[in-house]
Length: 565
Image (cartoon, rainbow, N blue to C red; front, side, top):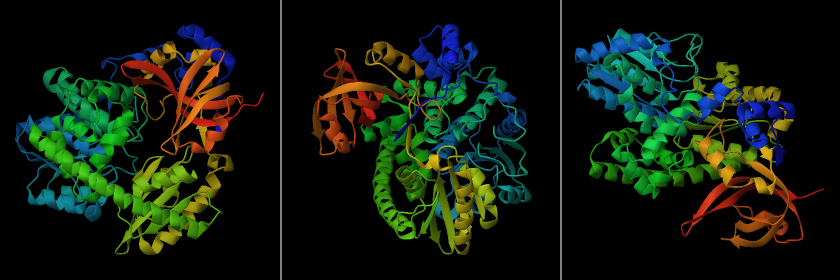
């Protein structure tokens, strides 16, 4: 892979190093995260929740709070309309838990992925009509649901939208729309996920009703899970929300369902990180929505009964195992289709379709994108209609690409890096042609070359306890605040061994300093590290490895190449 370093002038690093009173290395890491003032520095390292923005600075917040408090006072029937992914489920759980304390006639509804598809559906509105619902509050959806919201209003149901997806040319006819991505929005932070937007609503209600937002903080465990799972930028307010939410989970000040899910995953809440959520909790919470009804995830997250929580945790784990089997099958078939359609001459983007389970196409898209370093759409086709899920590469806006192909689609939504669509089966070839043409114009050849972003080159003596303490204070890590990667040059490998026929374990030495290394799935580099007379350059992530109560720095290797003077 090519090693990509930040393009930050050395003079800038020196100047900010004086301002920040930090070393050149640590300053360069922060500048790479666009921290360029003392205020930004203080906010970045502020561990309190007091740096959250005023929720009433979001458009329509005052209106939404007034409507909801009045509905609760009059005991109107309220339906929380969520979505089937982790963000939608956690957002709906937060609002359901909170409003149930104000009004016993609060219910929730999660659409079924296969029957209704993404977002607000006419079937969901029909359910609300049958239940005599007075007010629908959407979570993580609704900003593009013009027809569905109009249908609800025709039947006398008021609607409040909470969402974070990009709007279309116009907004639906809802009483209030809370969405930091509204075009005229002036809220200071645009990148909240659905759970984050709902938290701001709960925070605003608490401020209006109690004069304090303290009661809203109890839901930050769910906000942290939703935010981490939705892969939104982990900067600014998101980072504050996730940091405090993870701290609450570590203290076990969280839902009993979360604790039981950790038990099923065989993970310790004390060690909870964003990575644990993304690869441990999120797949299980997602699985029930992918394979059946996501309402089971809400049952888990809202129950106060440990026995019920344990039962549903087991169900989620079993559904996840089934999801993994289906995913492996779809992955094999999709890769086979790539070879059959394109051979070795791959275009700048890929569109694949088949009789696949719609619940796994997003995961498989992500895998193929990582394998081939190209934007990928997988479309699951059933009864003449295709439901697609796409994943993108750096610097290619998937949502903008779909906007450019909109004439061939029945609908679409999402973000720069991930998006979904619906398309008639007969129009898939037209969509593919238009999408590949758009990608051909907007993707440069260098964007298709696998690369690894490196924060800085370091000397081996800089990899020490001081560095580990600084990195600890940078947590939580995630998109746009990724765990820093470093390179080190001219080190000598020693004691290389192969683990489980595919991993490498070895140490590196330079100038009398020795550090342990682990290289997962890197058997191909064995010849490079087996000869201690040969020097190498490496890209790595420094971690603390604990063994027998002793903590040592261990380098997790990302790439290796021969050292050239």
